[in-house]
Image 1: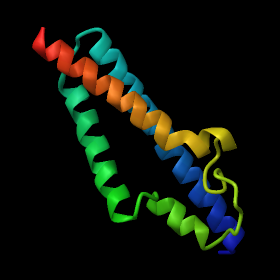
Image 2 (image 1 turned 60 degrees about the vertical axis):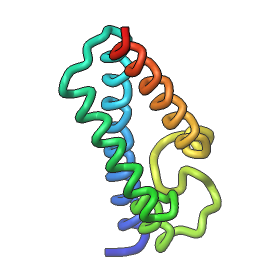
Image 3 (image 1 turned 45 degrees about the vertical axis):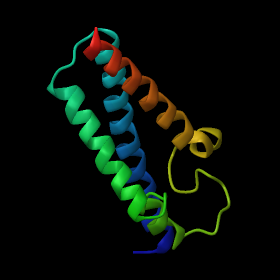
Image 4 (image 1 turned 180 degrees about the vertical axis):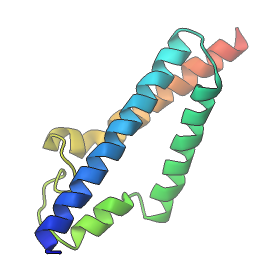
Length: 112
């Protein structure tokens, strides 16, 4: 398999995983806003904790980004995923902020 084909496969897998985590995070936001603190919310937290551990192990890079780097010398933030460059650039900031808001609302819902 050629490097270009491998990069395309990595980008497809990375995009599918990114979409999955979007579904998870927006479900979590829905759950805390509607005070539906069910098992799926806690599974979502578990998934994000697991993702955080993986990012820590890879020095805050997604393992797929590390793999894709072998097949591209692009300096664009979205070289390894099919999302807009601006979103890839600020992805961690946006989603970490969203998780922070979800966490704060979760605490509020648990305490009221």
